[in-house]
Image (cartoon, rainbow, N blue to C red; front, side, top):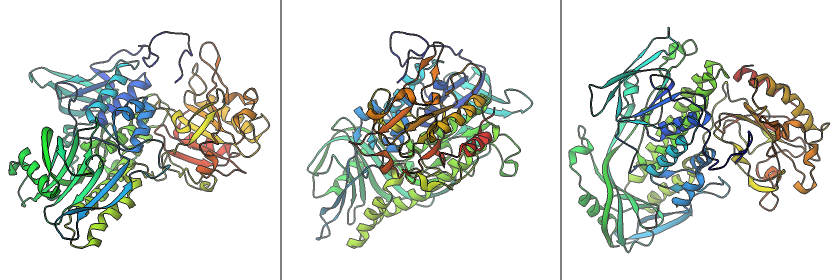
Length: 618
């Protein structure tokens, strides 16, 4: 964490100086809904500063008990970019292993068929975490409160209607009403509106979108309980398939005692809904006992419970532009999270995909609002995230079907285990790969960095920071600050001297930085450049690095010592770990949402300039 750049100041360095005025009736972005998507988006925009945001929520206050609990490795990587992953890791339950139980040889008892590692080695530097959604919300709210705008939600406010008139600077007018006093209404004008208001989204209905798909007609119950049991794997994530009583998914919760159970109930009739069954918590407990038999299972307290039906639905687009108008009409209203895709909770992807939606959209809105990027950038949101939502729907449908199957043979029971293991990377959130577009290049030089596939998230690895010899994860330089990154992997024997490959590329890139950086801002304000050398850090000379890797910044012209890195050989060489060509090196362009946009040759300064000419304005 860097601070004191513009002068020494005492106190908590995570609290940014307040500088943004809080707009109320005319804003750059109006966000409807305080779920994971809404808070991710609001936090990113508030941290960036200079963008007026209004965040409304129909509930009377912050979430106290969340239904989503699984935080995938990729999501923890993202939370690190916001600065609070350490708190999530400290409080949460770490999913280390998964246990599979199925009918025993006698056909009635249960036996453990297999126990596997939940996350494969070096898939991510971050663990798979179980933590209450409410706590994640708390961390977002605290981060927003420390931002330059001191942003906080307006509770008990609900959207009544939206209108769009492109003749105005603020083309969207939102009619808002007080939930407790409906006669109290107000109009908010906005340049953009984002609906993060859940499966019954008012924003979605206002733009004429609909969730499309089918229900599996399967009724499930879920409950968080404090219990005593002789079942030996109660503190492991467990998938249990009984012979004839149904299935249970066990998810241990944070704190050492609480546990969540997803319990298979009955099929619903053609016109029946979950609420029609009148399910009670006692019925869920009795059903869990039958499935877990012959192990005893006693519940001391039910913290929360619900019943739901499985369904997979997705919108055909995630903004207010018709397909026939794409490219000619600017999107002004967006939807994210459950507002545009719903699925069963057992895959543990709901909160994760919702946050990823917002993380994809936030920097794009900021870049367009600041005039850094063309409005065509906003079209990439619906295209990229709708494709990922459809992948999730397809995965969830298959997983839910396999988990609910009644295993008749050993091979039947093993099919779900095989499916779970095969899709471990997907559930960890690291398999998302965006297709070539305005902001994602071709794979012409992928062989130079095989471990950094274009379109996928930047996979961190251990390094040592040259300036202060600090061992760290390289991916942790990718903060949620709206900046593009270029990471240069030096070819063998290059130590960063001015006449070497890295020095030559940095000299060329400096011209690019000056052309896209607003006057008066630091040279890394829009594109942040780093380099990783193959030479051991004690054999490098920091003073010989090119100016772009030791820039003078701020009002005092202070040197930034945190741009250059060397391999942390005791933990693994990043060049070997990520398949970097040692002879040629590589240059990697990374989007503000941490996805790789381009892999190219270290001598290809013009290719990098041509790429940025499409996405950044001079």
